Image (tube, rainbow, N blue to C red; front, side, top):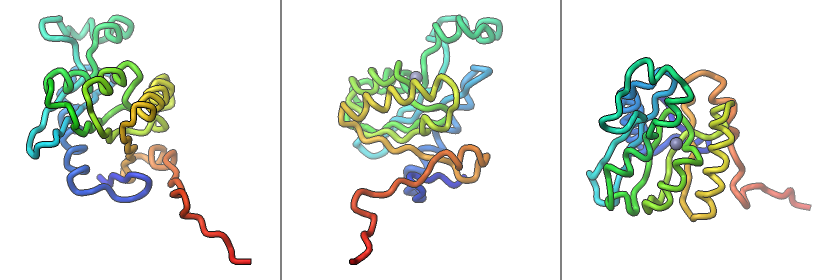
Length: 178
Ligand SMILES: [Zn+2]
């Protein structure tokens, strides 16, 4: 796995937490989308994880999970599960997400919980409804002053690495001397 943010290799700890989110994503029973989230709070070593699934006590039968409409209505996303589990410890934390872009439905709880930084798939990595929802979420994060780092896995399929184009830093362009 070679994870990059704006074409730069991610820091060792960012990579570790994304790896952990990927590992946790696999615990999801959702047959279509497995998403994992890791909340790393300001105090070192304080980690909370979440994955997408039906709420506690709500039967997550294969039949129900296979019925897309019902599943979408009932499912709790990985981000929200991690936020609820972390409680006040989410304040000031960094949220790492693997599997899907953070959607607009999760953006509200993410902002209200006091999370300060998000490291997640770029909305560009999804070509369906999650792209649109991810873009709405991004707009909300920008307005709320949350730092967002979108990453790509350079070693995964080429489609994913193609969509993320390196963005020029403001002021990084050089003007030819006249
Ligand atoms: Zn969501």
